[in-house]
Image: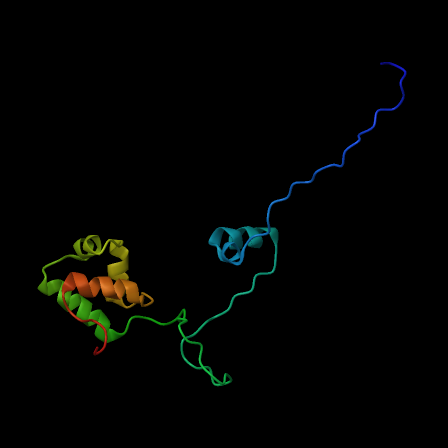
Length: 132
């Protein structure tokens, strides 16, 4: 086969690329940190569940990042837990959450989550939310 001429390809090259990240993946903490390291622009937005004066209607179903557990709820959780003679760690184990979650709720640092409040109500056998 020597002396036959230059060798050439008779097919097109195939380029494989990864798919672009989805919206959920873009919000992932790892992706945000990678973007920071790469020097990309990162936009943050504060979403609130109460009306903003410049808006004609409120954003519904979105929690504010600065919304904390109300004082009445903190006291109700603590009182119900004490009546059941449970520690924060024991209560957390009953509702299948980390002890830190109970600590944050009782100290008022947590952002209210209706699912966790529902678990607490079932575990403690009392209503923690408003009148139903």
